[in-house]
Every structure is written in structure tokens, then in C-alpha cells.
Amino acid sequence: MMDIKNAQLAVDKWINEHGVRYFNELTNMAQLTEEVGEVARIIARRYGEQSEKESDKNKDLGEELSDVVFVILCLANQTGIDLQEAFDKKMNHKAIRDHDRHHTNKKLK
Image 1 (cartoon, helix red, strand yellow):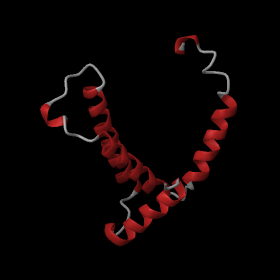
Image 2 (tube, rainbow, N blue to C red; image 1 turned 60 degrees about the vertical axis):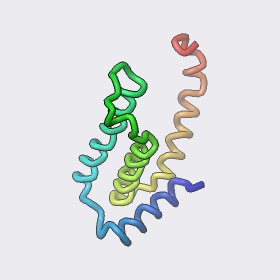
Image 3 (cartoon, rainbow, N blue to C red; image 1 turned 90 degrees about the vertical axis):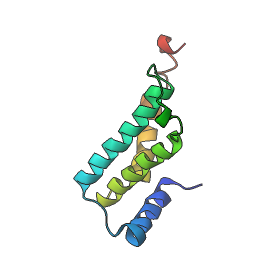
Image 4 (cartoon, rainbow, N blue to C red; image 1 turned 180 degrees about the vertical axis):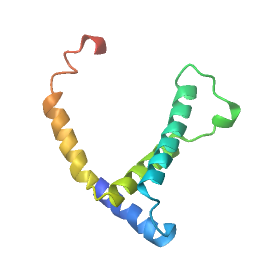
């Protein structure tokens, strides 16, 4: 199992060995938007009310989600973000803030 810190290192190694260099931040942001759109298309057609086109039936949701993660790791690397630290901090914050919130939400019963 790979943690986020090691995933960031693996992406950086791949970029340096195979990708020549990182795309700039704006290009990666556009690429992230494109990848999220591909995830949305699969979910809307497979789990939502839209009909799934024949050409979409073999699309791998896991692969598309991995594309999103890859670009996020690129953005974290090139902007100096320790995503493991940021994620751990966010999970701690959510655990404190939302400890009882969802259990008392009548809409979730």
C-alpha cells in the first residue's frame, strides 16, 4: 500500500524519468478539469439518469479516478504542498467538526 507522501514521490520520479518536466500549473489545472469531466461522464451515465453510450460502456472508472489523483499529485508537487500532511490535517479537522453532525442528520436515516 502506498501512502500519499510516497505517491507524490513516485509521481515526481515518473515525471523526471519519463515526462521530461511538469506541465505548468495552469495546464495541469485544465488537465485536472478534463479528467474530472471524464469521471463525471461515467458516473452520470452509469449511475445517473443518462443512458450510457456504447462507447462509454468499457470505460474504467478506477482508471479515470486515478488520472484525477495523478494530476492532483502533480499540482501538489509543483506547488510545494505536502499532501499527506494536508490530508491528515483535514481528516483530523473533519473528525472534530463533524463528529456528531452526520449521525444527527435526519436526512441520512
